[in-house]
Length: 90
Length: 219
Image 1 (cartoon, chains in turn brown, blue):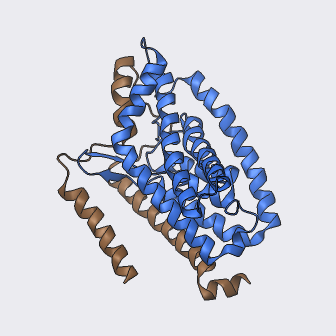
Image 2: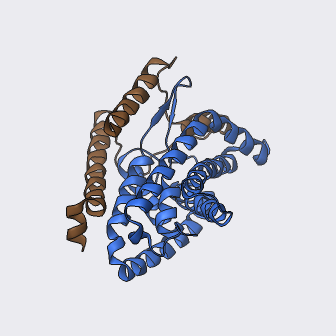
Image 3: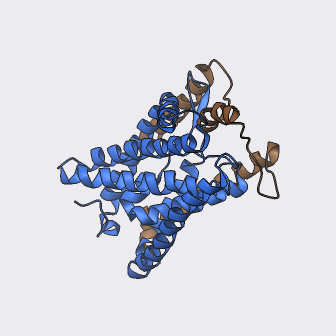
């Protein structure tokens, strides 16, 4: 029951985000707050790193990073909270 | 709160870097000692590291506004592991995000550490301690820590933006205006962060109270 409640909550969040928006997601709120000030001050974002990650490459990194962090979280969660993990720790 | 590359002048970037590196150094020393003293806390450090990385990278859309933002995760890590360790986890997450995820920047790393990793951790930790000493329950205290830690992070980000970009206008005025502009997006996310922080802290305290011996969960 609890599991289904979580699934429903996640689906509800996604549906709400998709259905009740009047515009496309235009970017991070920090960029939104800083952009007008930066324009007024004549300052532009710059690039320091020798590489630029955007487009599908950025999508790839987000998916890979999310998967790696999800795997790590699951692994440590199992170590901490499952019976088998507790036995291994002990 | 990820301030992008180039928006903070070089002198100010250095000013933010100095305390950030001091906190990071102290945190690394503390973490090494902590892991040597309590090796069984290693999985909790790993879990919190993964949580902070994902939570602070996840762009969550706010319905009706068309903007996205993210919670921080550092208040939760500070409650469970202490604020210095949480600051280390937040700093590592911010570095990875700057290098590979187009979030933040190398020149703004110090400023971003001071807002999310240090500000969020210490504010959340302080609120949690005060709430517990005042006799509030574990879940309520953790929730308040998550809420305040999140908003303090964005308050500091507003300050950094204002100091860097206020131009001819008074910096305090720009600070206030920037902070207010964050509120419609960030308050719902701070509430979400409060609920998540309370849920995780209560769950861990109920399931594995023994791994939190000596942690701040107990007043």
